Image (cartoon, rainbow, N blue to C red):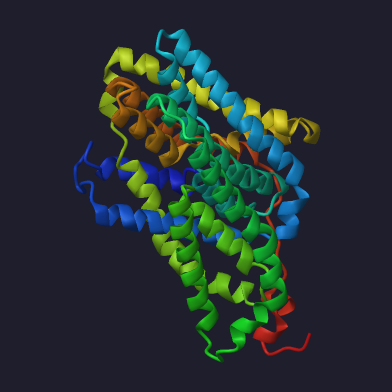
Length: 377
């Protein structure tokens, strides 16, 4: 904070310092991974609580366009760029696929810290990231099938239907049910009942999203989006805040522990990393710009840098390719480095792009939810 950089940068660098590749104070562990996963799930649940469906619907068209171009452009650039370096078609496809999905947790954290999570472009980024995740899942299914030289149309169709139905049902029907019947949370007449229900809901939907094949954070975000339509939204947000402050930094610290500065000493790998990172950054910025060209230059830039971080998503795709034997360890290292570097460079870029934007000024809670403060509306 003293350096006027987003807190997430300090958390990432702290993780890199104490990780196995530097001081070695902590080693990879399933316990740490679970805590980190819970941290990012709580982050996206909190972001969902601050997002109204009506506000998300207002940016529907640009969000869809950013999502579509944010998939097509990075996929195309990644394929052509890696193919141009002499790699096979399937290897180039895996690299392009690793560049598709956006790790919205990074962007959401920075924008939340800046008080801009309800900014119009922020909502565009959130909507586009959900679409990216669905399309990325489908592309990964196709590319994996090609690598195995087998493509099951029925299995692919079921996967696509499950993903689309899950998101569409919660987005359009879940939010309306919550808006109309959210008062049922008070039936138990237990003060902590809404809070307990919210925890069960966002953890349950996170597990369901993982089961379908989507990222768990999509389920958590949708749970927050649903509960944002209830009368308990403000009270829930206040109760989640301490959990957010304690758990969320774990995710970014653990991401930092995966940074291995040693890979930059190999000139061949370094060259490959620079090419892949450049294609990844340019692909998302160009794709987002194409989707928001009618909103002006600044919005185009804001949407572009907001879609840059890849985080853990790119690493998962690379690991699948490595296990299938279609990418080498050097390529895998380059993709992991791309995921980490785009995660590290995104926060300062986001801060620069949104500099000067007005932070959200919310009315006092007694004016928004007078029933919780003993006042008459």
